[in-house]
Image 1 (cartoon, rainbow, N blue to C red):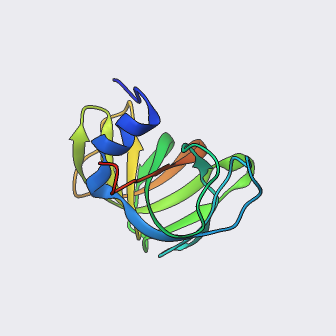
Image 2 (cartoon, rainbow, N blue to C red; image 1 turned 90 degrees about the vertical axis):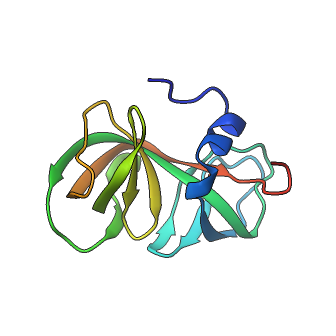
Length: 140
């Protein structure tokens, strides 16, 4: 499974799954973004070149699966200790081998070496960090 050739290539690969967020100001070179999203404030690792913009942007959010269980629960994303996140939602479909689209109140590109069943409700614990790829619509 090819996870990522470059941040720009990854963003282009999954651009259709970007989510509109509001980025709050962060210190120059700070690796975490503070993103106001439809599910609350998230702190993803910024895969773009500094400086990070502020204001409205589109991000591709990407997580790697640490563990999961099939479970019906309201869609949500909640931070856990150590940079992990608990995400509850539905596996919409496999995007390509090893990558799934998870609807957890926002679109999440989820890397998983374990096969996930499309259409199933799931609770996922992610490996750290949650990553954000900034989508540059004008550059594409």
